[in-house]
Image (tube, rainbow over all chains, first blue to last red; front, top):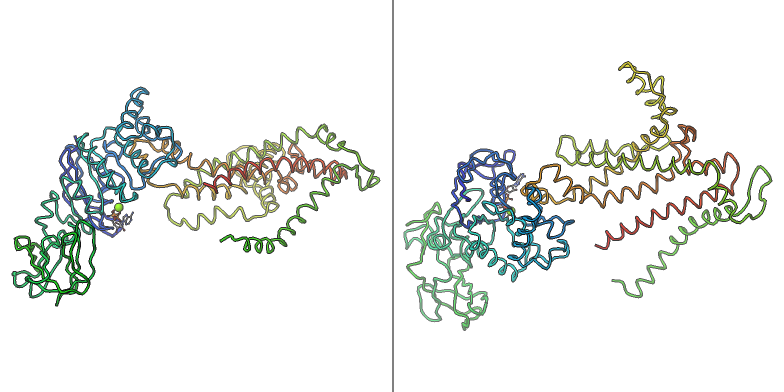
Length: 334
Length: 288
Ligand SMILES: Nc1ncnc2c1ncn2[C@@H]1O[C@H](COP(=O)(O)OP(=O)(O)OP(=O)(O)O)[C@@H](O)[C@H]1O
Ligand SMILES: [Mg+2]
C-alpha cells in the first residue's frame, strides 16, 4: 500500500524553476533512492511528495488517489528529517507516541505500538530520556520510531544519516535496509552519497538540476549509465573520462572507463603515464596517473600491495568490454 | 587561555569597575539600612535616635500596607498577564512573512523608547481623558457615556498604560525565541497529524516556556518599582497606591525617612527573591 505516481510535477519558487515538469513511478514496497549533487532539488521533490510544499503544477497520486492537494497528515506518509526534528521537551516515549496521540488512539494500543517500535530499534532502555540525553544514532532511531508507529503507507527519509559519523552511518544503513526487509513498506530515501544509494536502493533516481537523469536499479546505472552525468556520479571512485584522439579511436566524442576496469602494469600496456598521488586503502590502491594529453589524472585501481611510487612510469590496459562511449551531447552511444 | 598570570591581570584591570559598582550600590543600600533603624523626621525634629525594628513593624502593621501589597500584586500580575498573552500573539504574527516586516517590527518596539512619564501623560490626556480623550470620543460615537478611566477603573487604566510600555520587551524576547524554533519540528508535527492548535500547544509553547519565564521575572523586577505612571495619573488615589508609592509617600509626604527606608528594605528583599530565581534560570540556560 504505497504506490506513488508523479505526473508532470513541477515546482517553482517565484520565477526560479527548481523542478521542471517530471514524471516518476514508485512501486509498492520499493526502496527508492533520490540521489544527486547538493542543490539539485532532492529535498524539494521529497517535500512535494510529503505535502510540506505545494506543487506548482502536475498531479501526485498515492495508491491511485489524487493526493496533490491533500494535507500532509492525511497522505499517510511518515517523514524522517535530516535534523531528526525530535520534540526536545518530550521524553522518547512521548516523542514516539506523539502521532498516535494526535490520532487519538486508545492508550493501550499506543503503549503496545511504542513498546514494539522501541524493541525493534533497541530503544527500550531510553524511553524515559529526553532527546538531549541521547547520542546521534539513538536520536536517529527515535525519529525512525516516531515514523514507524504510524504504520504509514510509505516512509520518506531526507538525508537521515548525514549527521552521523562514518562508522555509525554504515551501521544505520544496515538497520534501515533491514527495517525495509521486515516491513516491506515503500521507502523513499534522499541522499547525496552515492554509496548509500548503491547499497540500499532497489531503484535509484538520479537527479540533476531538478531533472531526472536516469531511473534504474543500482547495477543498471553502474553498467549502462545513460549519459556522462550519471556515469560520473555513480561509482566510487568516479569514472575516468578521456576526450581527444583516444575517444576518436572509439568513434565517440568522449569515452569513460572506471578505475576498476583498467589493468595497471609496470612494463607494458595500451596507455603510458606517470604515477602521481597513490591512495592506499589496504584492500585496494588507487593510483592517479598523469597521461600525456589529458588534463585530469586517470584513476586506476590496483591490488592492495602494489610497488609503484610517485614519478614511476606506468602502463595501463583498459578492459575493452567496459568502455562507455558518449556523443558530443554527453549521451551514451549504445 | 586562563593562565594564572592572565587571570590576576584581569582581576587588576576589573578592580576599578568593580569598586565603582560596589560604592554605587553599597552607599545607598547602607544608608537605607541605616535610616531604617532610626526615627528620622526631617521636618519634625530630625534624627531622634535608634528605634530598633520599630519602623519595620510599623510599616507592615499600618492600615495602608496590605492594600498596597494588593494593588502591587494586581498591577504586576495584570501587566504580566497582558504582556505575555498579547506578546505571544504579536510574536506569532510578526514571525509570519509579510510585507514591510522591518518597519512593522520597529513600530512594535517603539513604545519601549518612550519615557514612562511621557507615555503616562499621553495616555492620560489623549486617550483616557473623559472629555477630550480618544476613548471618550469613541464611546460617544457609539452613544455611550464616556468612562472616567482614571477614577472609575484606576487599576485597570494603570495596568493598561504599563502593559503598553512593556509589550515591546515581551514581544521582542518571545519573537527571538520563536525564530530559534527549528522549522523542521513544526513540519514533523504537521506530518504527525497535529492540527495548528496542537502544534502550538505541544511544540511552540514548550519552546517558548523559558523565554516566557525570563520575561516574567525580568518584568517583575521592574514592575515592582513602577512609579512615574502612578505619580502622573492617580497619585496613588483610588486604590492605586502600590508598595513603591507607599514608600514614596512615607518619605516625602509624611516626611518619615525611617519608616520609608524600612519599606525600601522590604522591597529590596522582595526584588532579590525574584532576581534569585531569574539568575538560576538564566544561569541554567547558559550552562546548557
Ligand atoms: N523556499 C525556497 N525558496 C527559494 N528557493 C528554494 C527554496 N527551497 C529550495 N530552494 C532552491 O531549490 C534548489 C533545490 O533545493 P533542495 O533543498 O531541494 O536541494 P537538495 O537537492 O536537497 O540539496 P542538499 O543535498 O544540499 O540538501 C536549491 O537551489 C535551493 O536554493
Ligand atoms: Mg536537501
